[in-house]
Length: 281
Image (tube, rainbow, N blue to C red; front, top):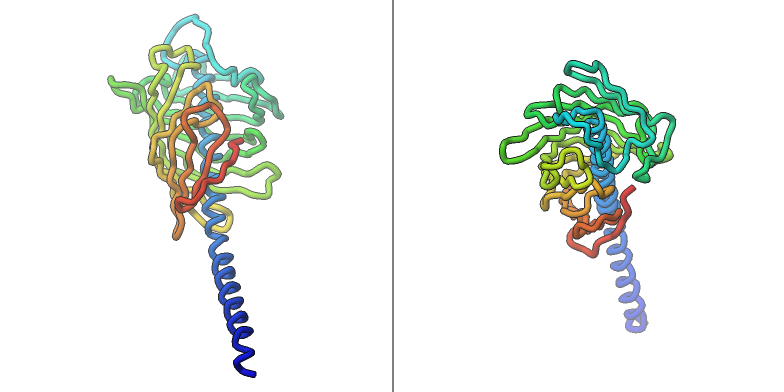
């Protein structure tokens, strides 16, 4: 009788082990998913910061604040096609630039924005040491609400144009308002193409390095380090090339922007496993 029950006991024991393994796997999944979600959040934060910078650079060029006095028409992506730009005072620095997209409009570049970006500019944009402090008033991009302070500091030398970009108290609220995340960090931006044509923004290319942290409402944080310099072309709506490593307590992710093609596609791989694809806003 006992011998006949042995296969049943072995089967039950195997089932117990299977359930235990599945349980352990399920217990590990939340942290993995948190790493994936915060990696997505990091990518979106980067896109929104880049978008704000595109708006700022176009406004500065259009208002004659780049450091070049000319009547040449600015060539751009027409980000400001539905915005109102005001600059005060007219004759001295520092200047306050207000870029107002009103209750919401879609620019010629295909991006929907609303609210205001306020910028305090200490001198012309391309002057070494110039700072531009950006804050946001009810500002949304593609439904994402943007908050915090972005400080640009010109660190250019005779070898080329460069800036630091520091984000403090950054907060992004997803469309619908049910989820948000916090982010902060410093990036180092070098203009790698287009410097000799300051009023043609369409040929501008920037490379970006640096670090960031991103935190969800539960207090879970991940650190992000750019391991392969990001490439941001003005003609592209998003970063088109480069990699970021996002690290947590037990898992890491690689955020990969691709081969330089202008698109919304990025991938995230957790712990070296097969990557998942997602679309930037």
